[in-house]
Image (cartoon, rainbow, N blue to C red):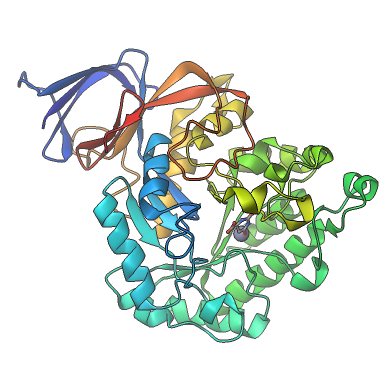
Length: 427
Ligand code: DOR
Ligand code: ZN
């Protein structure tokens, strides 16, 4: 099928036509397309890339599957997602990562790039078969025990050394477990008032500080998952200034929600790392704009009703985020220049840089003639009220319910084929 998109602004530039045929973008030379999309008022971006998605398959298909999570991703403007390893069984062997990769191909909605576990069963005791996962059909390049911290410094060092051979990266969930035992929310005045055990900022900052030193010592690549505190920003800033090979992500929810939300005792706001203070939010936004934080990653964490609609202390941490990520980021105003959305910066933080970190060479290309037709069309003037029930995800743990957010994904294309048209999934 050939598509003509008329009068569309590529990354905020003057409107033009784009012709899509054979999986690539071409100049329109008068050919008759099969479909015409009126791009007036729309912005074309390289397809978004999520470095941190929980798809729950295998094991918790009641919460999400590779297919339902992929559909939610496409609806959010994503063309690739990296699937975290904390499935059941854990993605710690070539067999499991190949299974996830194959399920992603079968769904065909986004490229699903499996992340492999660092340690066997995420238990933090023995290194998993990193080489076998790297050599598998899934060609794993990112390893993470996300959900758990690789707390043992010797294991962390060995993991960093191991992945150097194939330019892999260790993505750390930075949480010193001895400092967060029994923790329910951010350690601070709100936790004190509510009588809930606190998760102190230093538990994150101490691990990041240790890991940048280890990465520096080994000369290897470290990626820090879901940075959540102002102090973490400063640790990463100093490491980057020294030339350490470190990258960092922030989630949409840590850019807008704060620990006061726990006052509702609604577990939809329970997440790990926890929602922090308004000052942390301010620092994270500034760091994202500046580039100390390299990317936005969703940490899309779907959970079944029984795991979320219960007492705060028993609820699982995590919130869905794929379908709202771009809107939430736009709502912060962090990626603006002179009061206007800086689309080039949006592309940098949500597509090009995550694609580069993950080694996804098909992604992160500006939608211009000669590039793969892997892009998304956004209507920046639209607003929408978030309805947690109206979702492609199997889970409804959406913390933005009822919020009015800017921007709407109109279409998403993966290698020339639409996965979303008119705001609806094509399959
Ligand atoms: O809130 C979270 N949920 N943080 C994590 O690190 C894991 C994730 C999950 O798997 O639900
Ligand atoms: Zn995590």
